Length: 187
Image 1 (cartoon, one colour):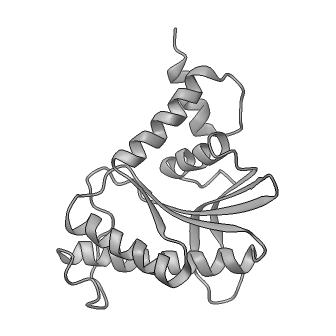
Image 2: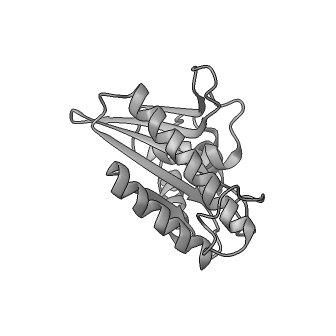
């Protein structure tokens, strides 16, 4: 469902539809289990040559370098900057743990699970260092790191999408991609 997806989520969905070649992209997936308030911004399912990969993507499209603001409830991330940074790391840890539990439960026969954080701008230093630590924790605990599609990596992915948009006229049913096609093919 696209109707309540935000602009950044639509860009990520378009990337997975067009570049990753995912067959199914879902926005704002929610658990049906009572008491489970989790939500995954973008879930993409790619089945290629008998291998099924599930992408669980959290998308933070804040253009000022910050992720979330709030007060952390633990001191786990106290070495990683101010309280807002600590809260961002705590919140992302909670979200990705829920995401992983959800996709491995719902898609229990998938071959691969890929967790991704997409953000166009994340402040370098404490926050990016903390995200690396979080990614490594997930790799150790689940065998799956959190792929950080942030800053330069985010720009590279969007440029990939723009390059396809400049060449391709086919409609994919992805509003963000169609918008890029229009912009890239102006005459």
